[in-house]
Image 1 (cartoon, one colour):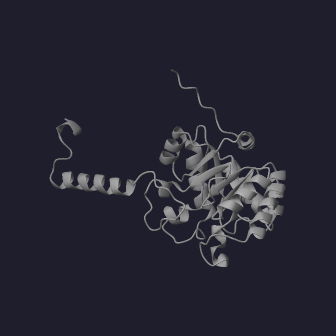
Image 2 (cartoon, rainbow, N blue to C red):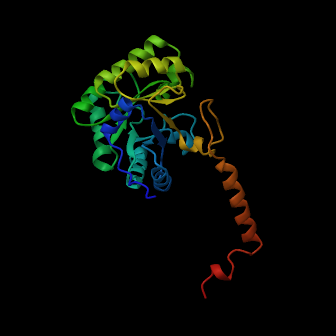
Image 3 (cartoon, rainbow, N blue to C red):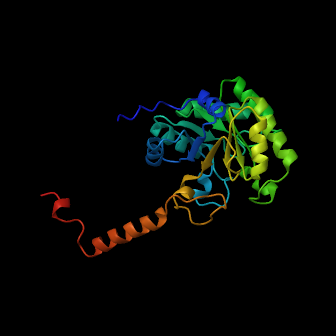
Length: 267
């Protein structure tokens, strides 16, 4: 039996998936090799997240990530993706100053990389910026609930239980013209309510099963990042153990002079 050829996941597919009830699978990616593997595995969307500040750079928040760093990683990931829709985060203080700043920042992604859209955090206060970006032809994914760039103001990485605020933020993002919205660390019942009440798909992370799609940080999903394990993460592999074991075996072979052997050497 021949496997049908997969076609690229497009902007219109987000709306179609919500209408048809087909769940959207999203994973983060930060480099060419991993992005290519995730694309080949069938990811609908790859998110070049500013989460690279923690899982790649080793900081305790995303606040130190710069635009130049994000552009660098977005270029690698978008070059790898053949079918996945690529979204890149706008880093801290590259869009909050004014809509004009946001347009300039987002334009650098769309002109300098092959990514398809940008993501930014915030609800009611960010909605006018989203509207301006969309009016310029820039597709925008929103992000409400726990917004990591506001971790100092939120008092830490906490579940966001203010139903009135989170619902208002989600509705404002949807009405501003965003094509999808991430709901992070909100109670499952609230995420279900939001998903039913807005016209654009919701992508959950720590928001329960009723969202229109799910996203995980790939190093968390693969068991590579061990500093912290959020409640909502399911590990589908324990690659940290695999890598340590492989590296240990390689180093043993080097020290015992069993690598390289004759077949691995040139004559």
